[in-house]
Image (cartoon, rainbow, N blue to C red):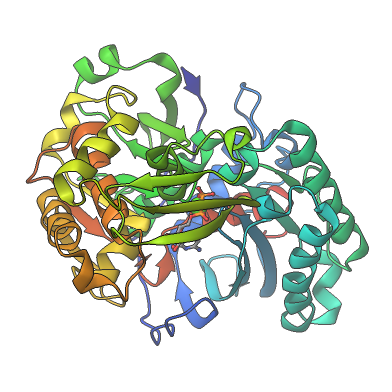
Length: 456
Ligand SMILES: Nc1ccn([C@@H]2O[C@H](COP(=O)(O)OP(=O)(O)O)[C@@H](O)[C@H]2O)c(=O)n1
Ligand SMILES: [Ca+2]
């Protein structure tokens, strides 16, 4: 079991000023003033993390003598790249600390993304790094010149790079590091790396539970989080029953202390179980070496379909079951083969509710289960209902992605047969909480800034 300490008592409640909704699309800019107590908690958090006696990936970033206590009016920036399997994103955060007794405020975030992700450039690392450079150029405009040298830039890659060979992944990271070194920004040690799957889950859980105010005060009702990326999926929650702890494999548990409480968190990242990786697994094409002009067919695809799909730098030919069966039933059986018996099923999650984001959110939006801006609450059975509707009427959905049936069926099977949720389990579909993305990137940025002593 992993163990680390995560902070100390923070007072007050979470306050968030509303700001205008970000426009839909790959490029969004959110400018807001958002005083957040969670920042204070994170301030303590990084200090205490650095005192953990376990060697962590961020250990070197958090000198124990940089705990920010006394501050004067100050504006500062942090640049965090999320190199995901389907895209690379830059988050440029602006923070202000007006006076020592005032809370750190998150002033705004500039967000931009490019597709495909870095892993698509596995054989052209320089070209991959160029995509990062183009995004970083935005930061040159966004950050005032006199603050360039004080503004740290960090990139963390997730499942796309985890799936590449060590050699190819390192070549990409090296090229990105060179781009950073040539930039005018502060490049901390270990600024370009692969984020461990467990921390991806933990950081997202921390972000959501801080933002929803669940980690301070007496009545704590923390929420579990479900992240469905392109190549991996994470489940993270705080077990309430001793029995769950006993039944859980040790490497699924991380222990930490916060606000005078000790939490033992259940977290796991399943590599190869992201939505896009699952498509390949369902098609029988996940083993990239096996691809060679082969046509992969599935009952989850429109009968007459024949097309090409590029993922992770590899081209796949895929199509429908021209002669054979199509529809929800055969599709569900196909998808089950990918999932059955592969995931750990903690009993206690069956009755609880979870926050779900990324592809859970996107597919729920695509099928009008929720509104893009508002999100919403669904039951697991809503995904199954939609999967049946789409798979059994594929001709009606021919303007949507040809994978819509497969994706919805996979989500249904992942939730029910994978994690073992009930049909009635509630899912809070959320892209933002208090106008902040439910992503690991903000948490990672707080860690970074405070570890470097950029906040006081
Ligand atoms: N800032 C971000 C980044 C990704 N995502 C979502 O994350 C999913 C793609 O996951 P990903 O490319 O990060 O893949 P992994 O590397 O996490 O497996 C899509 O549903 C994106 O819409 C998001 O909602 N907000
Ligand atoms: Ca992700």
